[in-house]
Length: 72
Image 1 (cartoon, rainbow, N blue to C red):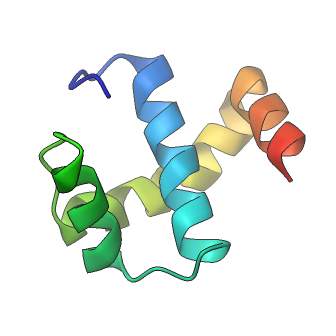
Image 2 (spheres, rainbow, N blue to C red):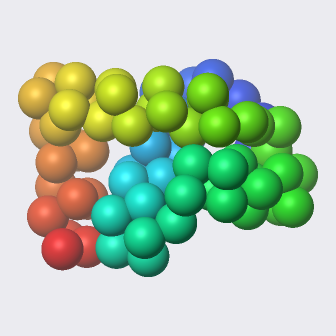
């Protein structure tokens, strides 16, 4: 997992976070630990920020919506 702020990576992380929270029923701290264990510095506030921005990505990114629709 790349440690970058490029839009495609930010959106991919947001999608993964959404799935981990809503499909796998993981807590914010568990999601943060998952990313930390895989080399991405993150804490629960970063996870919460990503969740809050999820709807914005859904609204303004066609590619993001398509990826979401493919997964669910």
